[in-house]
Length: 524
Image (cartoon, rainbow, N blue to C red):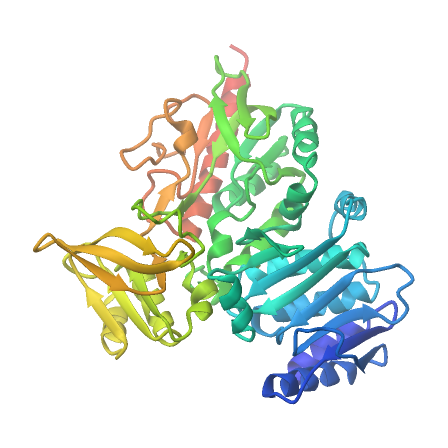
């Protein structure tokens, strides 16, 4: 099952085990069980520290759990109900290492917070192997199980356990259950999970942040633009901080990246990890999971601007760089919010496998929409592409590919009017023919929205000059309408929203902020 190169890499990792581990299997005679038996035996053959034990200790068949041979440290349970391949292979490797005593690469404060959690926690994470958001959640919960004996976690491949998915009406991944009740959906970091479990964590973090000394440059947003700005600022030797709701931003939700010059091919999460590593190589304070709520520019040049967060923290800085990025644009029609995650989805790569053999619609005829329709056509039963305008806006090569697919219908000049459902999940969509003004219904099980991005600038209305699209107006140096406030990336009026452009704009805004600091601090 594992090719020679992967086996050699895994063998090297297994040499880091500090204690023997067991792969405890629950299998039957099915084909999926045979594949899992092959996988676990191959892993065990790579190290005399790994053994396979047949137990059938779980109702989830096939599945296996990773456990220390001698659980003197009272670790919890990390179980895989499904073959952890594709994006989840890294999750398996980390589980092997952590259950084998290899220390996890997280802050000591996080480890302490996990150990001090009160109560018992039984997590289930429903994933798809094509989901690039799922591994973060799986790895976070497996880590918690490796640290705290009162934590149990099971990764469940929705495609393999379709009956459970159907019974719980799960229509988006990752979806996490805690003690039998839905806990959350979508990408979650270990810090986000802990914040939901430890209700006092947000207040403690806000108090800690507010105690920070004023910054020379405070960057709001941790995507490509914010990361570049931080590196350029830190290299100048000035006090630099990043305030981010989610480090990496929209790039974390990007699958394939093939236009980042010098890197032929990469993935969003991988690029974000590299960005974070680069930023952390400098003296930059990263304050994650913090959403900016208001900005007060300095009253006079050289004074302090203030940024207030939703958690109540207040930060001061001589200059501020706004790099808050953008988010998925929504349809804003009746039913969309009600059925979000219950048939309304925004990531075809993540959620597509849950709609195997079903009828879906893709809303949006640009490159993202057409690419989504092409990808989904190979999984689902039927795809209807809905485009508002008279023609698709995607590249010609993509349009030709789409037109060649037998299970795809294209509707042009069609406006999505309403998302329909039975109270639990999506069962249809109403669209208007813009040529005739007639409304029609589509019976379907899923709707994938791919209609572009909106800048994350709502909190800046009335503070800075914004375009009619809500983008921050900037000059050639990244300067906004407020003195000492700069901006960069997808939240600005700079055209062409691309990762590489955002990085360049972040660097430029940082240099602009540094120039401002020099001039505002110069004697009269």
